[in-house]
Length: 173
Image (cartoon, rainbow, N blue to C red; front, top):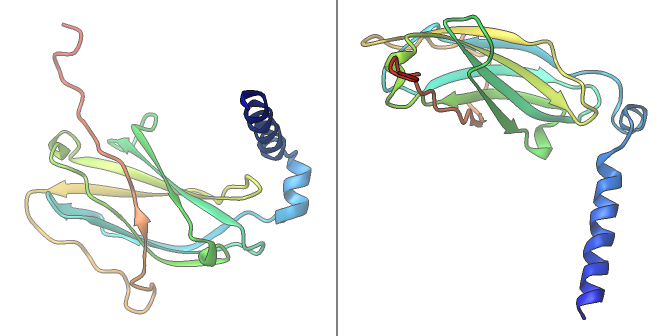
């Protein structure tokens, strides 16, 4: 019994491993060579602490194989990414998406009064859209700007799952 089970598990691993290692040419033959295109985006440049930020975008892919929306933040708009989030695109939205992502910064956002978020879309063949960046200033008061009327659907595309945690000034001392 153990040998049969082990053989079945090994066969499954070999089968799934082989499909995961498709060459770029095989992926492009299956999904196409065209990368996704982000046609329009919008997000308020500021928000009040405690609010949830909405990032609107409209994108398309001629091959209909958009897979993931990748978002990452940079403290102060420079340096390397501080955190990355992958939001899966629903199967029926892989040709076109129109809606908003949302991000709740969490309670420790005081250490990040200004950040920049970059967004890209990856398709099933491993192609990436051109990235775009959005600045955000977190303020004690105020409200978020609304997107241009009629430009985007009020459709939830998913969350950005990042919690920013400021680095303590006492680290290493």
